[in-house]
Image (cartoon, rainbow, N blue to C red; front, side):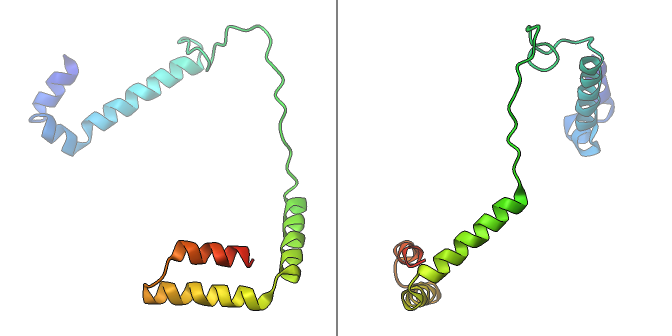
Length: 117
């Protein structure tokens, strides 16, 4: 009833929304609930209560970004050296022209260019 009275005092729901009151009250309620959860006063299964006594060990993938980058650069270099540059340039030119003119099947031309590397 307090919330309804507050909305009425503001002149109705439209005025309350314009003032930002409902959003503020929702944020306040969410903050209060989160605080109760954080303090363990409110149980949220799967968040702060799992029902298990021992936690499973989770394997975490450790990615070496420098090694990944180096491998990707090496792969691109191999592709560039192995491709037919003339076919690649022709496919890209055809795709570019079709895009500029609005004529031609861009998907088909994109596939041709992709295959030409």
